Amino acid sequence: MQIGRPAIATPPLPRGGYTDKVAHVLAKNYAVVAMHWSLSTRVMPDLVRSTHEDLVEIYEAGEIDPLISEVVSFEQLPKAPGLLGGRSTYGKIVLRPEG
Image 1 (cartoon, rainbow, N blue to C red):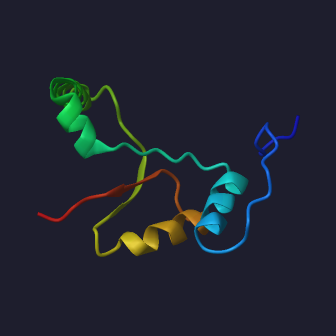
Image 2: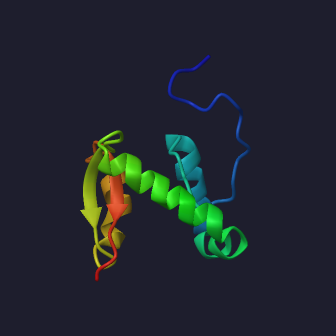
């Protein structure tokens, strides 16, 4: 067992562009979370709405308190990977759309 490394062997990736970014994510063992939000709202609108309402309710009740290191706007978004890569964050980076 190796501490701080993925438990599975990862194949070498070709260098350059997008694959460099993928290799960096694998090497640093980041958690990458994504969701096709617009598809989900079309396929399961009731589930998305009720889940959002549940999350807002438990947040407002103080039952969850996410550790947020930085809040960035769309204009500031390009600096977010640098914050992660430079290890200057201590919690989540949140994108807050303007308006």
